[in-house]
Amino acid sequence: MILYGLSIKSSWTSSSKFKVGEAVSRKITVTASGISKDMFPELTFPDIDGFKQYPEKPELEMTVNDGKLVTTATINIVYI
Image (cartoon, rainbow, N blue to C red; front, top):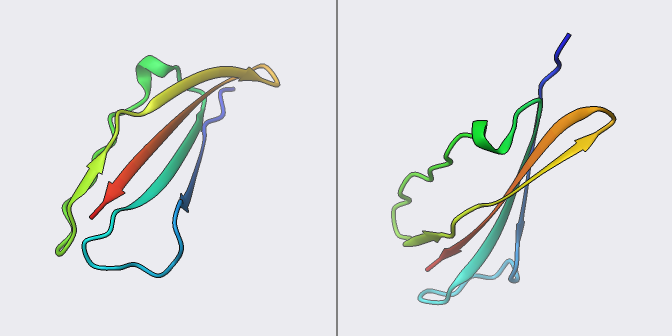
């Protein structure tokens, strides 16, 4: 039996007070068990009215945890 799992975490790298024209960064970490790096889907981010966003290329890491393959993608996105 193969079990799959998914978790998503997000954090902002700046304070919660945003200023117009000032860049803020967000780190999103997606962890999926049961898939390899090659199977990890490409993540896209829809446009948001009033913001420009600049997602960086995801950093992918593949490990084995308790005998299960686990792939983690970390994406940094800058919003202006």
